[in-house]
Image 1: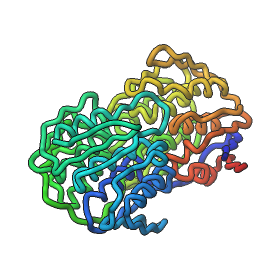
Image 2 (image 1 turned 30 degrees about the vertical axis):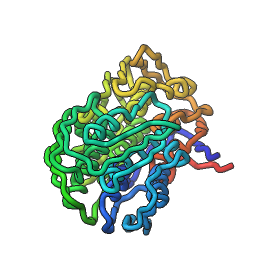
Image 3 (image 1 turned 135 degrees about the horizontal axis):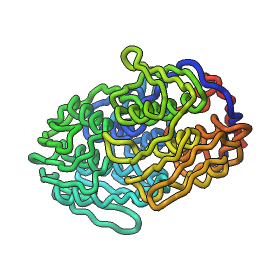
Image 4 (image 1 turned 135 degrees about the vertical axis):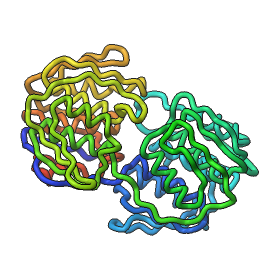
Length: 419
């Protein structure tokens, strides 16, 4: 099992590209199931989760052509298997996204109950309730969700609480439903908008993506398309923090500041110098004198839960006392104990943590517990004095494309060790 060794203290300098967004790529791949024509997706990140989704499409019968530079072409005219098995779905909860498209186009789907990061309960009941409202016959048993429908029917569906994957699943299903579907309290994330834009380019009739109400008028069929995945806003934020805590000076290319309006404002309050330099480019400078601030996670456009762990590291090496409140997932503080091993002064108080800034972190062996927790440990290792050895980095590989190579290019003393 791979580990990552970091010798902290290096100031990050240079230019790196931001990869395509994992959370936009996975629904885009699932959406290809809605057509028998070829779909070409570019700006695809090389991630374990993306590989898993490609394997899932392949076992459904998709013909895949992968080019590391040009992207991937998916031809789904040979789909002949409608079961998403446990061995694939158990590693990635986003596998549930194939249910809506398969049910809408083929009238059947059999999906293993999803797995993924252990960051609390993320039930799929809203997916099921929404599809039932559209006329699907759904049963649960033996760890599987089995769904059938002659043709889905348009419906008015209220999503409570807000769910990104639920919005995406029902959005895809509704494109081929008979009649009009209205999704209320829909997720507003950029990744949902990117999916809607892709579906529109395939012939779907969608209005309101990016707002809390999305209206979809079903069509008879969708056609192929070419679509480029949006930049990964979570990776962007992670590298912003990396520059800040190492007193670095880096330029991020192929990114979009508009997707991070609230976090960027928060980062500037901490004292990070962020400037936009041409379309898709961002310069980030850490000038010392960072001041800790209070943060509450919330659905888009608020502060993302996927940056909460990284924010704890930033506050841990900033002056002052701060509170970070997690409002999305109830079990997303498992990284706290590992950060404490590095000398962070953090105390859990219900769904919040109290952070007192320290003069320095000290390297130590630590263990990643989930995707974003692993990123926080990498950040802490960059800022820490001495060596930090991170185990279970397969979590990291699910969401960050060659992160150690990018950090190495910026001057970090980091390497991957394989047993």
